[in-house]
Image (cartoon, rainbow, N blue to C red; front, side, top):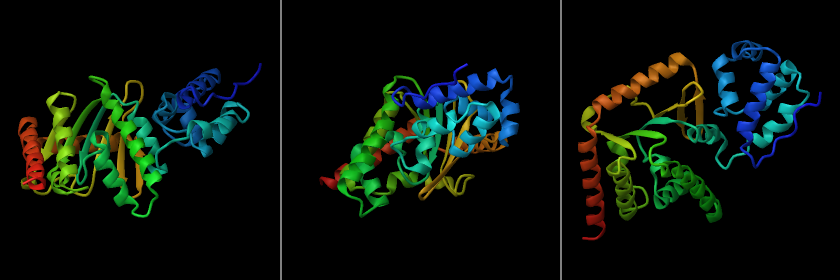
Length: 279
């Protein structure tokens, strides 16, 4: 019997590679848990590989070929499936984000990428790398704007944002840019496309004081949580960790202003920026 053919990179390569993994595993008569044990990972991790929400890294590709008797199929094709326009530390999270049915995000310092405007994204990316060529900044901004197109769908994914008040007050790109950015977020909330709350300074200390968190739920794969730092990021699928951080997000929503009060605060802040820019 002939082995599987190389994947066409133009046809959702990660989804195809995940489907091939499921086919090869079932052909060997193995459950996700059994295959996970051979790779020293959880069964849920195998499910995420098959669903395309996680990457098949080269070290796993080699082990899969050995365990599933697929020659060098996964080693040959994981490179094409892992090509991304995003930085390495964020690529897997961005691609999982595109498959999520629900995203819950606490942002402590910045307006999140999914709801940024081009001018705000340009200012953020320029701050990340002050010496980058302009064409590189253009590519980064386009990549970020491509992510925002997830919200073109009228209802999916569910996006629930908790913005720290610091994200509203940190002036990025100038007052005109901030006014536009906040009006954009407010517009999404007014159209009921997102759920948005502001965590005010008056809330004091809270469970996520040390950083941001992003929870992602999927239709046919276990949930993930993404932790991010300067130039770094990691996805976690450990059920206990996901449960703990889901509780953290619930505490944040309880401490945050209700959506209507949050919307009023954001619109007032946008008006302040616009007024101060054009007295």
